[in-house]
Image (cartoon, rainbow, N blue to C red; front, side, top):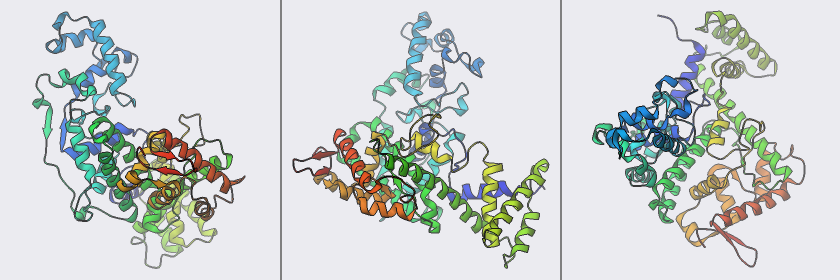
Length: 500
């Protein structure tokens, strides 16, 4: 039996046994996260092939797998039983309706001619399907956080999501109800018992604990402010926060588990403050470096038991020589690269086993994650959950240019229901944001400046960063006021709360 490729083995172990999700593809989008998490919360999957056939229309005639696309005339023939005029329906009218359906249910461009890879914008349980590769097991990771019993209870977010999905009387689901009901609703549903993970199955750490607190507060606040009645908004909020939570764990796990420096999230209000822009860019870069450090530390934890107890230079070189490379044509290239990286780190004064761990991290990024590395995955998650901007590939330098909906959602995960009811000062919100996610809004300038000094970001930022932090907070306060999440009084004090 062939031995497992060493790099693949390390990659698989890190992803399956440590992270739980797979941050190595650029295809993950909100509908994929939603499909994975919603499926686990409900224990239900549905056959959505009929809806898929309607959504993928003649508009895609020039795409790959165009032969799998039904024309509108074919749709009339196949689905005449659900059409008002039956097989006499005008295909041109059907074509226009299909274009509308694509605009509604393919907002993130995740519906392809190939059904197996497609995920739709999910408005109810009828659009949740089986596992898709682009989910990257993020749903499994998040579900573990929600299943954990804290004070004897699982997260209220599970029931909130389940109730929102159960409602199929919303305007979006009504659009496709005749298609769902053909030939019968029950024939398209597959119901399993909802399976909750046992405590032994859930690996817990301080970062997951804070994210769980965030999910719980968000769920309770959604109910408190009455958004529970708008089920589409509930689902949107939960998936927005799910994307942020996954990003936060990927970038903060090294701090939570291995004691590395906690990456700050400098939220840029868009106020055109050069120092804030620079600090936000650097904090995003720092977060990506934290992901690399996480991989180094996790690799160290895996290989330290595989190397002779001495862990000296000779033992490490022997381990490299015994690496199994599944791609025989690349064996010399990969081993040569690992040895070169290893020798360089040793020359810098690293202990041999640490040098080897760092060398293997670079090798993983170089040879295993060619299309998208875990560090680059920060961009995938961040931009698609509205945390990072500017959008588009032309903007090579990203920062925490957070959109208003994401900012509002994160804030609702930080505040308690009492905070929303009574209101708290902006500075107090800033303190809570630091404690929850090391999120820097600028209202507590001295503490936040100190945090940025600890990451060597303040020292490398030109201009009056301390002063601009306060100005940045004022601009964010204006955003909160426009969202109805704050009120500024005559004495200049801004209180954060709901409809104060």
